[in-house]
Image 1 (cartoon, rainbow, N blue to C red):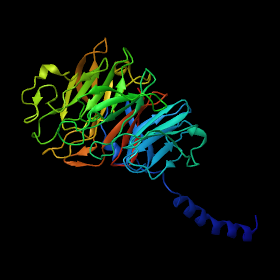
Image 2: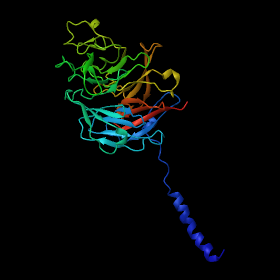
Image 3: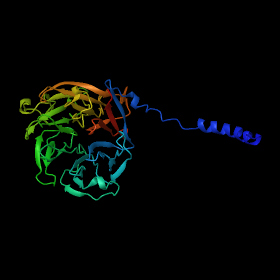
Image 4: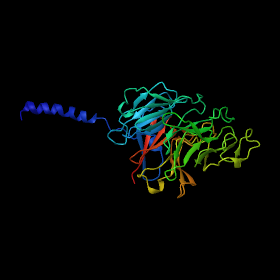
Length: 375
């Protein structure tokens, strides 16, 4: 090697070392996610971030996850390489009236605004085309108070949609308030399935006997500890669950409950924490979690808003008996979104993915998390 060439290589060596030193390090683990406590063997990660006001979740046949919001947008989260994280956040629609609810049927995406239900046909092939929807039903009340619609298709093929009470506690001004309703996929045949439901923003059907289970939020202004939120079971249509006369089965409304009997109404299958804002519950029907979690109920608790000491901001687990008809216990499954009296996130809705993992939406941290089991 000539002296000139050797001298040139010596000049390059420091530059090479400098380049290596400046290579970006892998991103550090998210500080907030490290605060989440889960049972042994479970892990939590981000499925998607920057999903503003993420609320209800639904999954299409190709695995694309759809997200409703309390804002004005609906998003799609495709995970084409199946690595457990969305490839991108696609805005499907904008300018909607708090499109909280999403559901998928026969390749079409159903979206529930406060006042109407829309349908986006063949959605998987038109994610980025801002497709124009068909109006399925447009006669829902247009009141914001308890106006977020959670929707899902039941085992009977009908689309279920609740209409919350437009108040803290009041006699329904129209028969449709404080109900859960169902209609045909084309928007015809609306009928009321359950009565006396103050505000449900989450329901699912038992994989064992197909009964409808739903969460319901109790009224405010009766103190920190009354009433409890509810987990209810409706084995048949036409049942009344107490609003506005009774809450949690035995807490009488101080004005409207006078002269009424609690025995008239269906009692909760399980009382939950007071003011925890229990929302988008799901039965775990996957096969990746240990056997003791299968066919059990997971409940995201959005968190109290005016309780002296905040409660909720977690995911709880209600265990059922072997028949799937009786609730036996109520425990915390995931917590850490509340640190002291400061919350950095608020779980909203759950979704069991085909791979057995569990997605969780968060409308405060604008994220969707993925909980998986490693064993």
